[in-house]
Image (cartoon, rainbow, N blue to C red; front, top):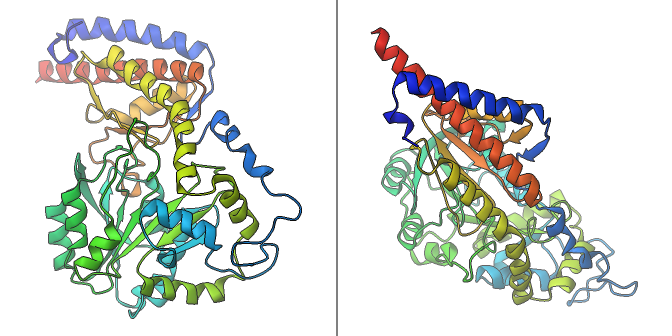
Amino acid sequence: MKQYSQMSAAELSALKQELEEAFLKHKEKGKKLNMTRGVPSDEQLSICNGILTCLSADDYKALNGTDCRNYGGIDGIPELKKIFADLLDLTPDEVIVGGNSSLALMFDNVAVNMTHGVRDGKPWQTQGQIKFLCPSPGYDRHFTICDYFHIDMIPVAIGNDGPDMDEIEKLVSSDPMIKGIWCVPKFSNPTGIVYCDKTVKRFANLKPAANDFRIYWDNAYAFHDLGNTNITIPNIIRLCEEAGNPNMVYQFASFSKVSFAGASVSCIASSKSNCEYIRKRLTVQTIGPDKLNQLRHARFFKDAAGVMAHMEKHADILRPKFKLVSDTLQSELGSLGIAEWTRPSGGYFVSFDSLDGCAKRIAALCTQAGVSLTPAGATFPKGNDPKDRNIRIAPTCPPLDELKEAMEIFCAAVKLASAERFLSEKQGNQSN
């Protein structure tokens, strides 16, 4: 088939009618297919069921003798701190283990920085209008945290090697009201790209105008490779130390997509000085985390090698789904010149770029045919994609047969929205 851009108005009009008839058949099936978020599938959750039974009635003590049924242990039990530390190439005293959500740790940290400041800093909220840099497309929940605290968000373009570091260095060094930046360095949400070594080193060597500037390093997909080899990125905490910026970064990770999303464990890692500051706050905030759940995870995985072996099982489940998405997009759209998409080697998403001005229309068509997607534009601050082209595809949750149907509908919607756009342009040019 010709590329849509090479078709005449008459050809596009005939194509549009053909696509509308085909799309009507999809709508008449009355499907309800959900690809809104990166949720683990039932099969993925089931491979973790051993966590529910790995503790016996008399197994409730951590390595240091802590009774996990009782109060205390605010920064995590030692065996789980070691697992996270080994996975992130850190020491246990640089790691604080929390509850099931790293997002909650991020929210808490922003909240405390707003009201009390970073270590040795003034409360952000007393300094004026705070700003964060937001590599985009990015993780919508990061942007929602900023929105909640009325933090101005400055979008920064992101490419195959990471965010635009020239722009970041320029902005951070010139504006003392820029207090932070969100980063997903490995299998970035939604693009799936991995920050290159040079990008990570440039982050560590930033020279911010604000001495209380912080990098929010959300290493959510640190263990989520789909390939046969694990991709590694430089250790941002060590690089910050070497650059003379030991307190500039907070790193976050979790097992939300490793064990049970709703009953998992997470951590914040940083300099020993930052961790001490956080522990002091935790003595006010909590009497202690769910240490029995931490103990369950430690017993189930045993060590960092156990986690990585478990992640191979996840990869075996997810790999066919990502292949199906890639193959379907290529076979249905690859020759038409109407879209681009990522082919990630890990993580949970595929980032799809339509023709400019088509993403919201595609999402609306999918909704009409029973396919739920993350709202178009959600991957940009305040949901404002200036080119209206980015859509996050989340293939992890649906079974393969449902995913196949969802992708067929998605591609049909892309074709129809694209034909509508080109036809509108052709007709507009003819009337001028």
